[in-house]
Image 1 (cartoon, rainbow, N blue to C red):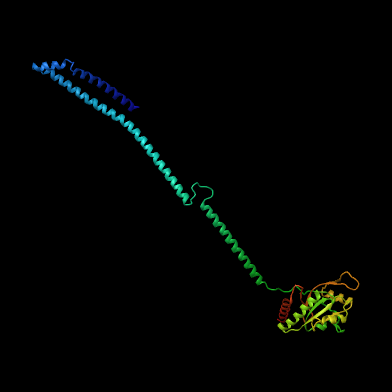
Image 2: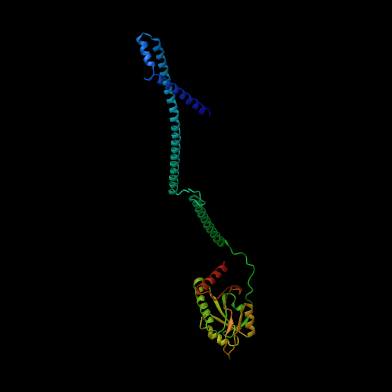
Length: 334
């Protein structure tokens, strides 16, 4: 506000000075009578009028100089204002340019960041988070695999380290019996004591299973003798007393092995021995005199004291049967 009043006062002064200059210039013009008077005064030797004229002229010249100074200062003010505005506009333009350059730099930085694989927008999934997720997953897989291997190793160690504990008791298999041998003599379990024996229950009219099992037993007897030097007595006990006579049993057992002993007896005697050895047998439907007997397919290994040691089912072949019997004999000797 104060600067505006100062500018207004200077302008008024300039206007008054201009009016005075115009008046003085009119006095000095050719139409004015003052120059002629001055020249006449100079001719007559009167220097008072010219002296006053020259003083007036000097004052006018000083006023002109003041006017020029005032006009120059006002012009400089007016020119400085647009210059300042221009400078401001230039500075704003520069700022805009600098801002544009900064934005361009920011864009270039963003492009560089995108090129280098960095996350620019700050999204939920970045390369770093993806890497951490991958590392975590790999660590979990490695930990699971290591724990699995360790668990398997522990199981193997425990299975190897397991030792046979004390027996809870002997199986209730075996007992006294009184049967007829294939040579017609009566025998009991005592006649088999002193030697290892393998007992098998079957019948002579069996179409396939009994012959297969007796062939396997005869081959195993010979291999046991070769591997351990122990004579094992094979015994065949009939579960079909109605048809398996002493003669029938004798002819049947000699077809498989010369050492194979055949035993038969009355239905009550066969029933008693089958109960003692936990053997199941039952006749199928009868068609005249031709029938089959369903029975257990098991071989019983008996010790020299006629105590039950182990049984072997149909799933054992000659080799596994031989190895199993030899193992039991060696363990018994220890």
